[in-house]
Image (cartoon, rainbow, N blue to C red):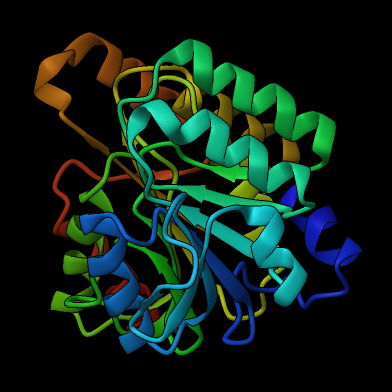
Length: 290
């Protein structure tokens, strides 16, 4: 199910992926990463209503009630989104449990998931009409609204630039380029750095295209995989409405593939930058010209 269809089905304003009122479940809430990021999300006013950690029923993490199972959590709380911090060997079970309970948006922050298990998660999500962000995602951050995952807010301002990246941490590097020019973001989305992930650039671009707050999109691409090729073809074939800027990370690892991907982006009308610090400057200059 596409993200735009998901939010319409839930009668939610899908102009953004995450709202302040979005009710969050944290799976793996008592793990070290789960505790740490639950605290940081709460500081960002994220509406965390429950957590799940098997064998920890009745405990609390920063005031968030903990349950043994997702089925127990949904009995006491309405949940719109689940974020997963469980160990690698438990991700498939955790994601399946959330889907079985009707949760339609799942963000998987755990990385290093075997491809076979990621494929099982994707198949189950298609059958359940669920959208998966990740595995290995830093999460979603909508400045002024809410944040889910591990994304740092150090270089993020509220603004009109949609940022989409893959490998954890790359979204921060893109935001730094914008921060230097005092530009802010309408949305920051980390897809996950694996060769196989739940949601690619195209689904996010479709959603941001309908977001009135987003004026321009920045894509942080990579040389591995075909996601960048696919999104370049999509932008060209669809006549995408909003300007897109692309930067490829780790270019030195595969110069020939980098050149091929940059060529595809340029043919699609995407502005390709060689230096990441050009991103903020280009957007700043275009704004001044207007």
